[in-house]
Length: 320
Image: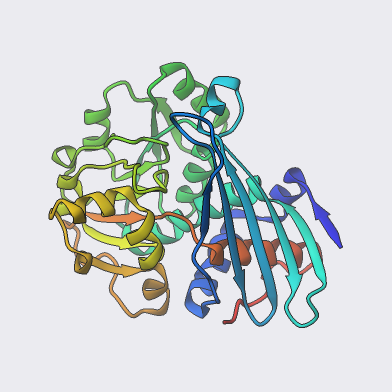
């Protein structure tokens, strides 16, 4: 059985190859039971344990995730994870993989894959809302699917936004801190949010025609990154309908308030990958992609990493 640590995984999961592998995986499908969510204590903001299984004809995988939202005060990431991959034919373990790095890379790649279908083809300006460990992954992945030339970073603490700018030194695009969030949203062609917000950070009134909004961070019904007006103004797509309607605070709260209906969801990522629904239809519409995470993406990323380690950069086809 192979053990793949974070540094090795980073070398195996080339971003463009991962985006392409996820495109194939969402088109092919897999068996993905609902995610199991346990509160594990911690006071006002309880910690969580997530269990995320998925399997195909080739592999069985499960990710164990811990979420400790107060870790930022300790200088630690909020999310840690481990991934186990098994052979579907024999049940034998194939690999144990650093799930934290896997989650970051596949989350960013899923967002970029959605942007490939939904963002304006000529999008050059990207706003990153959030300064956590996902930020650089999201920016670098988006830059592979759209001709990004300028990036601005906004965070509640300016010094953390400046640190993200420093980590992106040497990239082909220009990076700067955004001090005025409303102005930065209006400036951007793509607005990407990766926060742990429980109240809307982005307001629909700030949006302009032709933008793409990418919501990654909120993953429980109590969390949200955009207000109801932003949802009303956009054509909404999700990674999975079942997951988003159960766990996305933006959608759960807006539907409960009557601001939108479940039928306002235009499609999920598999629909886009299979050509069942249209992506961006006009230069003027606002598109919005909401991701709460799916174990299918973890499975595809884990299979790609193991295959790349074996000298097969394309990886296995994920089949349900």
